[in-house]
Image (tube, rainbow, N blue to C red; front, side):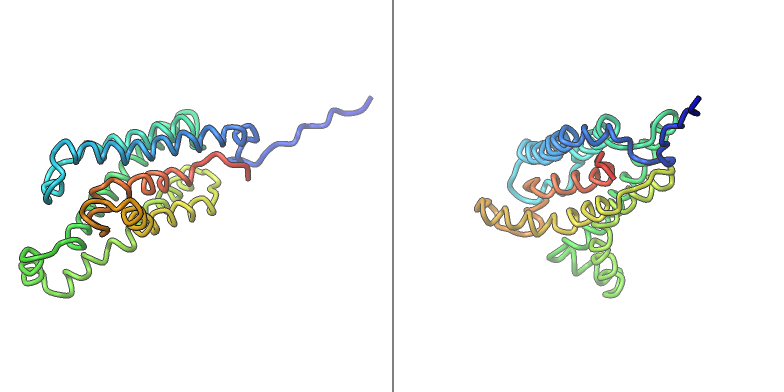
Length: 219
């Protein structure tokens, strides 16, 4: 009698084959969530009033909503840990993104600060510290997808480093691509970094870049 052959067992943390069939749906929902995040930001700015710089001084509810949509996509469509580790993973991701957002807002304040206020801040902090704070934006942009991948590794996931790199690239190119769209659309207010943020065009790239590391692809 021939001995039964044990079925091939995938290594711990390997991507199940069936997840590859979910890839088109996951991509569609990621596009929807990313575009919706940008649209909600723009609608909120328009509701408060488009003219001027008042949009820099109030809390944007579109930001936590975008965070919740990102977490919902990860939970429903992303390749993330299962079982009891899933809620803990989502909690760590949420805390990490909130921390990243706070530091990014601090850096953007100095990076986009112009006029008399910038002169006062330079005198208060000194030229070196002011430039240091302003330049923090550049390493912070690609850092978020890298941190997303690091959290996955912390939970024992075998991450797809190509997707992590693609997410970081989305963040690095978010501003140039948004500026290009502002020029093509002949956006009211011109094409600059402030209008790239204010218009909402930057946010789909940011949201998609955050989620890309957990896209359910075949390895």
